[in-house]
Length: 318
Image (cartoon, rainbow, N blue to C red; front, side, top):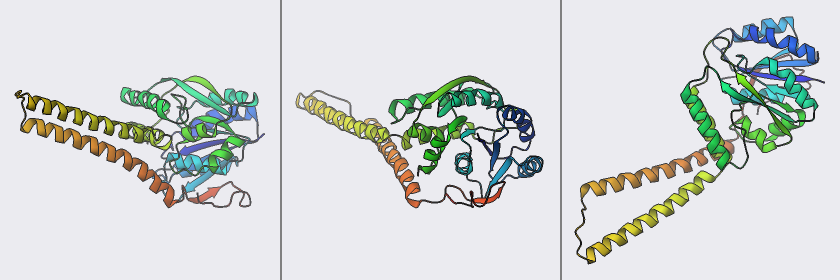
């Protein structure tokens, strides 16, 4: 059996040594036939040097460095593309994805599960606003999306080789791994765990805006419900305006005095203008994603790879 661990990294020089110290004994207890793939967005610190120093001690540690910063989703996808394991685990290096869960995940995979999803019971160290956005986002996505995404799960997961092969074949450019794995399907199981705080340093991920971006990807990339809702609301507003006009007509014919004036007009104009802008914005979100897909730009460009056979893993652009 070959086990692949895919670890997207950016400015993580302080976390890598502790991550390796904790995970290597756990992996060796499972199998000596494993690989640790660090997918590196070019970092201004010593992250790359630390990885190469560790690789000099252990050739099972491998490195993918990109030509520029493509972001965590694309770094993860690159690691999946270059992985060779029968089972592939995606996890962060900051110890918020506990390495100690790897053994339990492998056990579930050996029982026949293609996807093993650690689900957070508690999110220690995260601000209440991010927790609120995440909880709300998952509820909305699961009510309107075409696929179900288990709540309180991240990219931390185990995937069998056939799941990885299908995920890599998907053409979507957003890199929303949770949704892509849900689209692929296969037999899945959840493992609950309590998420600890980061081992060192600050997150390189914008907590609020990043959560919103993930939420929007889940809504707009896996459902057309927002367009339907916009259309329904348009019909509702048209019907409401017709009803108001009818009421005004009846009041006018009955010589009933009713207050009309500048405030009423301003309120109606601003309200209708807001509805129109929201509808145009929803349409723009879908058009923007169509534009991204049609351009078909590479999802990532590898500048340097260490530890990969050129026959099996030539430099590729996705």
